[in-house]
Each structure stands twice: as C-alpha cells, then as structure tokens.
Length: 429
Image (tube, rainbow, N blue to C red):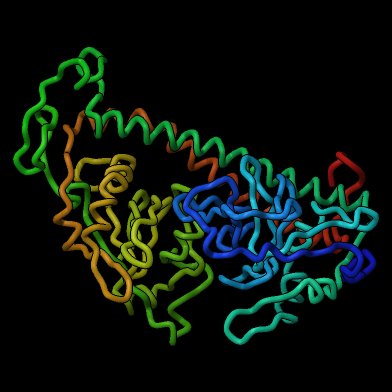
C-alpha cells in the first residue's frame, strides 16, 4: 500500500512519437544516429550497436533532435519485458528515435524526469502498460494509454531525493563498469602484444620480435612463429565439453538453489562481464542425472556455440550448461586467462567454420580443426601472472555491481511506495 497519493499521469508528462523516417535516407554512416527499441538494455540505458546502427541523412525537423538527458520510452514490445522501458539519451552524438519509441517530457510543476525514469522501472507501471497494450503478435502502447497509468506521486522535492538515492547507485555501477572496460583493454592489449605480434619479453626483458628474436616458419600454421613455439588446435587449450537440457516436463529437474545451469540467454544478459556464477535457473541432482550433465569446475571458459556463436564467460564456480555451449576446461598447461583470449582470438575462424540451415552452430569436431599458435608454457605462465590482478579486480568489481543492482532493485519499489523514505536531500535513508 502506497504512502503517497495515487494519481494518473495525465497532465504530469507528455509523450511524443518518433520521426516518420523514409527508408531511402537510411545509411551506414552519418551525423544522426537513429535509436530503436533494439538499443535498449534490460536494466535501462542505451547500448551502442557498433556495426548495426542506422543513420539518417534526410532532413529532420529540429524538434526531433535529442540532447543528452532526454527521456525515451519503448512503445513497442520487440523483446521480452521491453514495453514501457525508459532510458536517457546518451551524450556524444546526435540522436533521433523512431516511431516505436516516445519522447517523454515532464510537467515540472508535478514530476521530474529522473523520477519518472525510475518509476517506469517498477513492476507496477510496467504491468499497467502491458495490460492496457494492444496487438496480437507484437504488443504496443500509446501515449494516451500511458497517461492512464495510476502511480504513487510524492511531492517534487521527495521525487528528487528518491531519484538521487537510486541514481547514486547507478553512477557507482557505471564507474565500476568503466574501470572494468579499462582493465579489459589492458589485459587484451597485452595478450595481442605478446601472442599476436609476438613481442613478449625476451630474456633481457625486451620485445621479442621487435628486438630481432628468432622466427621460424611453421608448416602447420603456414606462417612464422617464435622459435620454440608450435602449432596446434583449440583442443590443445583444454578439454572441450558440451551440455544438455533436462526435460522441462519434469518439475523436479529444476530447483531454486541447485547446480547453476547456464544457457546462451544467460550469457546475453551477462554481456559486459567476464565472469558468471548463475543463470536464470538451477538444475537439481535429478536433473543432472536425467540429462547426463557434467559439472564443470571453476575457471571453465564458456563459449556459446549457437544462437548466437561467441558469447563468452569464465565460470566463477562449479556449474553446468545446456547444449548451446562448447566450453573449455583448462587442464593442459594453460590458464583460464590465456584460454579466454586464445579462444576470442580464434573467433573469426570459429564462426567461419560454423554450419546450419536454421541457425549457425559450431560442433566440437569443428573446433578440433581450428588451428592456433601455441606459445612456450613459460611465456603463457608469465602472461597469466601479469594479468592475474587484473582478472581478480574485474571479478570483484562485477560482484560488487551485482550487489549494487540487488540493492537498487530492492530499494526501488520501497522508495516508490513510501515504505522507505528519504529524510532530506543528501541526508541518506
């Protein structure tokens, strides 16, 4: 039960559909990036779809051009849970939105956009929008239907305080993500420098190839490699294992707290993270036995092998997967950190070797044919030692973000209903 008065959104906000674009003016490059529901992330915010973005080169009325901080709402489902999602326009480029999105404008006498953003993340609002939507195949809503949504609305000062508490958590999550991006760049750059350019430290600490280190032609790889390095395939990185799915008709196969069971969908939700602990559901001992599932150890490198190919993560703990994976158990002298980037580096070849009429898939036998360059173990060990602290730091930041997300999601409905109140600006809860 809300402690704040319940009111409809009529007169509190206005929503304007996007620009009616003409297809002949779409381009792969340009000044104006077109935002679509596909740009939404589940937790709110926009994602950049590099290589998939649409640009518009036609004339556009100035009123449709967005600036940083404009609030956009998804008017069409186009993905589970998307309808009614809100996100702020990012900075750095000129953005437009298509007609499946709406621009939200606040009536500053009644509401603040920052409060509306979080209000639209609640199950209360999302469920009302969904129930009032129409469409047999694809659900969609309208500004008028959203105006009919009834929500608890505190006074404007309280709205600002609520939004600040939640946005402070989101800002910390964003800072952690930026740190992890920088750490990832360092670890990947070092891998490329050592194992792609072959400029690992020589006996004198100088870059091997650039300092004249001996290179020899490898017949198997059809190229020169450092002296003492060899050719091999992905199977030389570790044991390649697959997974399976217990029968969903037997409810005893899945339980709330069992063995983590990972699907490609779980990895798609984990994009931006390097590690994973759990998926959406766990399997029971009965489920493991019925599907002949194998439990993989901590540090197993997971790779989705279909729908789509190439999502990756490192197991933070013991877990198992469905059949949409070919995972690597490091057990042949290489660490998970080396295996992770070695597989990523071979991804272009992995995708090229995939097959399938309905959707592309890569088999275990195919992976055994993907050739890679194998360094001396002392070099890969040195790399693993060098990036160990980076991986540990990334893992800690990811786990901290998980806790912050849990805290934010717990606070969200409590703050919106007045069950938890903010005692004043910048004074905490």
